Image (cartoon, rainbow, N blue to C red; front, side, top):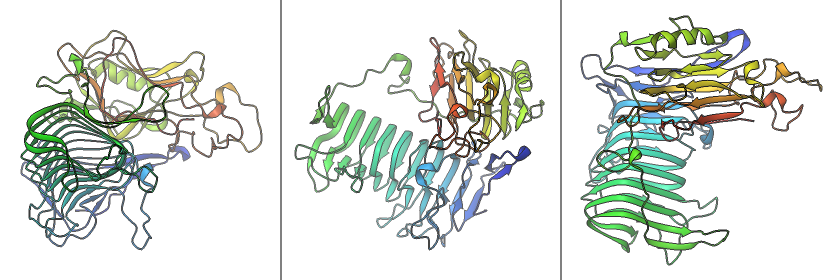
Amino acid sequence: MPALLRPSFTSPKGEFFSQGASLYCSSDDVYRTYVVSSPIIALYLTQLIGDAKTPPTLLASRNFEGMAVIDANPYIPNGNGQQYYTNQNNFLRSVRNFVIDVRQVPPEKTQGTGIHWQVAQATSLMNIVFQMSTAPNTAHQGIWMENGSGGFMGDLVFNGGKFGMWVGNQQFTVRNVTVNNAQTAVFSHWNWGWTFQGININNCQVGFDLLTGGVTSTTQSVGALAIIDAVVTNTPIFVRNSQPSAGHLAGSLVIANARLNNVPTAVGVVGGETVLQGGSRTIAAWAQGNVYAGTQGAGKFVQHDVAGPQVPAVLRAPGGGVFGRGHPQYEAYAVSDFVSVRDEGARGDGRTDDTDALKRVFDKYAGCKIIFFDAGTYVVTSTLTIPAGARVVGEAWSVISGKGRKFQDAANPQVVVRVGEPGSSGVTEITDMVFSTIGPGASRLKAPTRICANSHAAPGAIVVEWNVRQPDGVQGGAGAWDTHIRLGGAAGTNLEAEQCPSSGAGGVDRCYAAFLALHIKPGATAYLEVRAWRVCGAQ
């Protein structure tokens, strides 16, 4: 198994567009196991994708050496703690469809870690099973995350280990996770705000172990945690704080719709204090933290039942709780069910106007083929409509980017990508795409100069307008997954520091990346996987 993945790049006419890298691990017709003895390093703009029908296994050998089977931000040897990437800027990663098995690694070794996931936005983990030792002295852990600014993960299963997840990050959304037979399902040592929804914990010693109470930059601990729609079974402690409240405690904890089965302590403190009794019951809604009212600067500390959130019927799952839907992967479809936009005449080279070619593809194939955007940047100079009923799939975040005069008038903003015509309805799915804009081609002049209208960036661009509505009875039928709006700050956009210095030198007329990123119109419905839409670097 290769230990290093190197992204590929293209440079059309001097412009530098990252095409990214995708590693596809197939299972063919038999169950496939890849033995690894050192980390698979997922570099910037990398997707690791296994077979969605029969996920292959990444098996750590007994002599495995390294931080984790998959490492998204390695520490540099002899680098005094330096890493490949600044953690808050470690964007654009996805790992999906694998079994990661570290059980051959001796249980007492922390090398038995599945994924080192110190990442930022536009990152995702999905459809992964982690297999770890259940020995009493196990040091294995599924995910280890010490920092970052994420992110989304969902459809994960953790079996065994000292920790299912050991995590610290500014924010993350976590959906549909099961932890079985771990000593601690989730250990959280710091955050700003995390949401866990659809969590199942079975036969663990502790469900959530929280480092609490720190409020300074040097003592920051868990700032906010929401646990929604949990089922906890045969686990002595559901949630454990590291410090007692004594009438006040920094940070907040909200539990909503948690069903406990043989869980003696619902909320406790290290050392044995019980804050909320458990048993076999359902916690409708309970909160711990500081409540602020009006303009008051001081909060009132609470630890008690609260009024639960009112979930509208359209957002409720058939079996109860909040509705969620995983990333469509089309594993049951044949290759013949897909059509490549490149095969149909689009170039995706970052400079050719692909507007007409893409319109022809959608006119011909929307609703009857899955439309595949090969890796690249597709320039459009007028509105491109993705019709209701279309399914669109990118490759390592293919880009549709608006450019030109149509998007330069802030007094008359125009749509770059329209999802559905107003009033339209149909199953409409967008995955692994980026929507963006491109500024004027020339670099910022050193001397003051007159800025002409045609040298503006895109101050009149509405990057995505969402009109489509899901069909009746089809929850999540119109949505986007692992799809991002990225404005400025990327190679090839002509909206980087060279053209748009933070000092504002030379003016900002050439640096308006958009009028509006996303406009969801009245009557539309949009299932956007949380953290799926991301705007970075806009002026």
